[in-house]
Image (cartoon, rainbow, N blue to C red; front, side, top):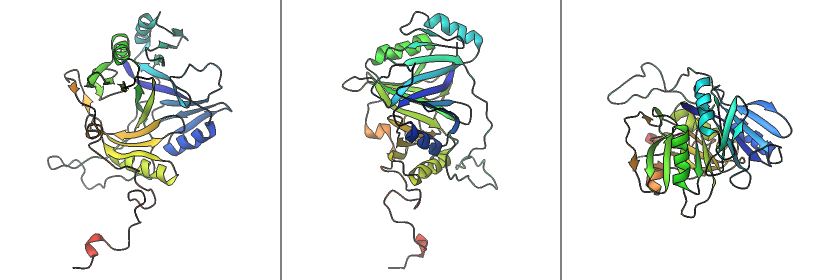
Length: 321
């Protein structure tokens, strides 16, 4: 059985109209709307569902709304789904909807699996010229006025019991630990070959269950910047970013979300294989972010928040001392 990635997530909130505006600004496409539910899609068909907290049939939350109520993972075919049905049958919260099955993980989250429905994409992305390789010839790098997320790339949860929750994903779903904060956190990918992590489980000093953030993959670093500045122009609040994670190498930008916790644009994470050996890190600010801008970049001035707009002269045109 091979898990291929995140297919769909469900948020619950009492501020559905506010979430509607947020995720449209974020760059998702609204494909279905009722008074109680919104359904968005990313470029490859990964789905983001926002349901009113009073919607019947929602799984219980890890914490008071707004938060994430459910994560649906994809598997690579009908045979893999049948294998998953055997593994999950009898687990707490067992659910069998035919094409979608699932249970409740040890942290209390509703976990579902289905045969992947995401679309394969061919996208034009930035190519970076370095000293050793010059792949971009006679072609300027791209610039983006806003982002169009490709998919939900990873989810991050606070957990009550790191070992029990991690063991569930490893033993039942075949996840692999990429890197660790020993006794505190596990970066996990859903298959031996893939991006650095599809899930991060973090046990706080006072263990609790909850959502930390949901991360959306974009094409390249330029789209992180363009998307972040668009969100700033629309009045949404930056939590941290842009910046760079040294553990996964990814470039990021985090925003406060009305659907719960934070959402992140990110790109350029490490690609791993079964040969990768997990590393141990001690949590700390410089381990989380090699560098980062607090408050973000203003979309109008294209400078750090609250900095004045650029003048008419180039820096090199300043008067000599």
